[in-house]
Length: 312
Ligand code: UDP
Ligand code: MG
Image (cartoon, rainbow, N blue to C red; front, side):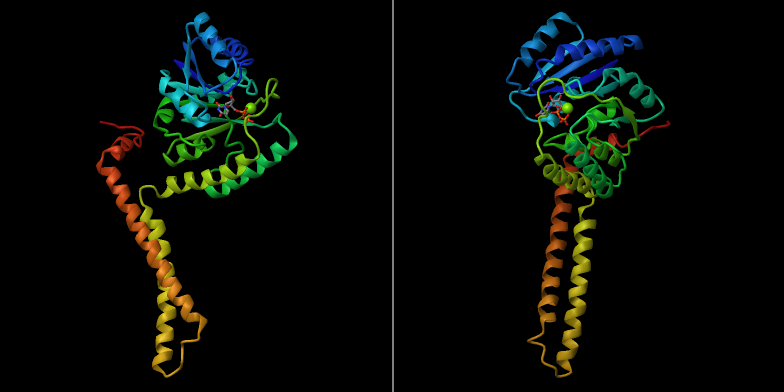
């Protein structure tokens, strides 16, 4: 079964049209499918439109969030309802073309766990396209994952990937990074993109600043979540060592009878040692938090998701 998850926020004019397009694209595959609409606290007629759709079709599930929590929350709520072995996410604004779903699925069948769409001929304003390009380049540097279009809402997954994700805040933007750190195989294919016909984009330019902070979160958690001391402790050791060398040098000078009280170097040495100790203890504290977490079994559950295959 294929579960199509659609986050919608004030898309009353699009949902019925989207369902029809999904229907014509998916029925030719000859597999059962369901459409899960996650209504992210819309305040227009979206929920009414979804209620009508639900009454008319037997493969429509509607999840209504209590208020507007953001796309990540909407996706997470939708994923919770998904029963299929394959999950597709698609934006609810008709910009993604449902006719591309079979291609995404075919790529998934080649042995990938996540196939991301890439809006190669993007139909958005020029500034938006340039900013997005820049954002994707920076993301590539920081995260080490080179995809053209990280934040494309149009993706296909093996269900396991989606059920292991913990999406909150605006982390939906970095799903490929989160998945990559869990060892999933990721691919990208160009997809058709269409201009927005109804309403406007729900995001303004502030998305880039927030996005950058989220990128740090995602990259940090992905790399160091189970070994924070390697980051903080490493940094602390390097700084502390530099400080110790400086202070040692000054001590020798002092013993030789020079006056060191007025040397800026003294200040630097003391600063480095103090900051180094700070970092080091921060690392130890993080390490304690991580191990607590592990004892509570949250990590054990996670470990199951790290296994690809078992031959027994
Ligand atoms: N969306 C949502 N909650 C929000 C903002 C957006 O569920 O708080 C949905 C929106 O209805 C659309 C998708 O996320 O289906 C992508 O949003 P949008 O088209 O505004 O973003 P853009 O295409 O400009 O990246
Ligand atoms: Mg859009």
